[in-house]
Amino acid sequence: MGRVLLTVGGSDSSGGAGIQADVKTFAALGFHGTSAITAATAQNTLGVRRVYPLAPEAVASQLEALVEDFEISAAKTGMLSSAEIVSEVAGFFERNDIPLVVDPVMEAEAGGRLLDPQALDILRERLIPLARIVTPNIFEAEAITGVRVSDEKSALQAASAILDMGAEAAVVTGGHLQGTDFLVTSLGHIEISGRKVVGGNHGVGCTYSAALTAFLGRGWDLKRALVAAKKFAAASVNESFDVGRGASPVNPLGDVLERAIGSTS
Image 1 (spheres, rainbow, N blue to C red):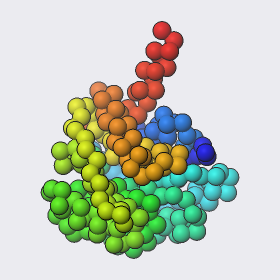
Image 2: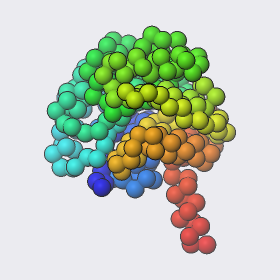
Image 3: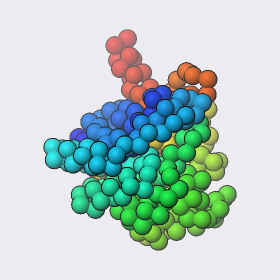
Image 4: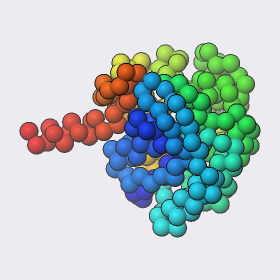
């Protein structure tokens, strides 16, 4: 099994989501995390103040440096910011056969747009067809497909529409649907049940997709990886840090720390 994962996304200055959440999650699950930063955000737990996209060539340079040196087991995309960056990232994954999780990040948990509207067409046409799985919440699923998602039937309809765009699988995550996720593949659909978890949720979407990337990087089948990622994300909410005045950041390393401390007591 390879030990290297890649995340392509934005930097969260508050440390709760984006690249920071992804790398913490990769580490907690036993991988070395590499990253290509697409944008710097000025944000905190109350919301995003400003977004500063990197030049597309800067994103491309990071990606090429990483693939030159590392054997990457799996990758995920998060915040891609602009149409030009989506195009650059899609080109990279067209050239490099790496299992890919597309987390179509559009808005921050605490508020603030993270993807330009004009980037959606390129996301649909070039990046989604490369995905092993796409992981939208209900609002992202609606934006991608135009399907109003409010229940199981509409969630499955939206996921099926994403498959029609070329993805191997799509899961509409259930944070806004009583905790149940809805997975659609070419073989049919599966419900992955869950429940609402009490705790801070800043970065939970990033943590979920990063955990899914890690479990797929282990070679696990899709259903097993999804169930494990859901449990991991829930645990990170349970262990969330009560900091800031807004949505508290999740804590992907909480269980790891507890086990380490427990082993020395």
